[in-house]
Image 1: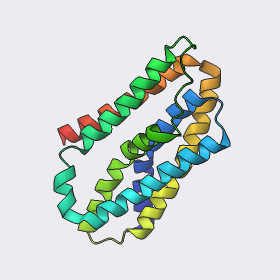
Image 2 (image 1 turned 120 degrees about the horizontal axis):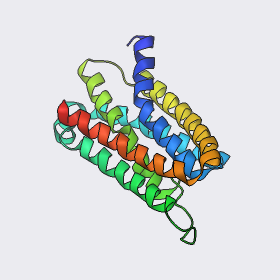
Image 3 (image 1 turned 180 degrees about the vertical axis):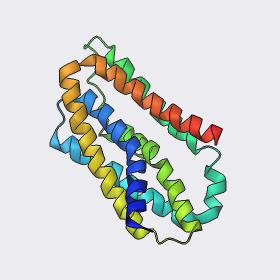
Amino acid sequence: METLTLLFLALALAMDAFAVALAAGVTLHPVSKRQLFRLGFHFGLFQGLMPILGWLAGLSLQSLICDYDHWLAFGLLSFVGGKMIHEAFGDGNDKEKTDPTRGATMVMLSIATSIDALAVGLSLALIGVSIWTPALVIALTASTLTVAGMLMGGRIGMIWGKRVEVVGGLLLIAIGLKILVEHLLA
């Protein structure tokens, strides 16, 4: 695989992770180094492992997952986005906000943003490309853009406050909807 092609592929796959990280940074303002590491590490890990899983699975898994992967991504992103919107309208007396860099929320976001990478792995298996270098480049790119997105989101969140949390939630839902529509129209 050509270097430029691989870089564009990695950037394309990392765009969802960047957008989700931007929304996460908005809700967390200020963002801690621990939160940056957790989300950057996990998004990079999932973005790197999913193409490997897709590559290993080959054609047999493609027919099983292609019918519903877009619904899964849409559902996960909509759930987390809806939760962010709900928390933004809270009166402040509710329990502490959910940290999207922890627990089930982080796992759901990691899966939702890396499902496309699974399909890329399947595609690379079909054309006979070794997966190891692409997986590493995809993981590092996703991790880097996740950290950048969180830092940007944290700054935006400090300036705009709860209004941006609503926008962040809507952004997650829009990303899920984009994934759904692209797959339904394909």
